Length: 113
Image (cartoon, rainbow, N blue to C red; front, side, top):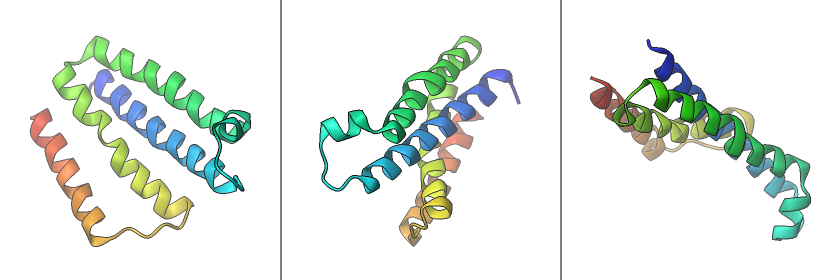
């Protein structure tokens, strides 16, 4: 596995982690507001992960791999988000979502081949 592929997977994972933190922050809010989000340390931490670490990994991955390979790997964040939601937030994964996990991985495998 190449350095670029590992970086793309890490970028995808950090996108999912950032969504996890943003979801936690939104669940804690009594009433939704943009001001409330901007004052939430948890939400801002999630945003920094997306805007910072994930983006840096993404750019580094693009330096060493083709866009046609890196971009599908970034879409694995959907799978990571489902799994984080299930294991950390106790969200239920439906049969349709399980099927989508399989389809995403098949798409990534076909693109990478």
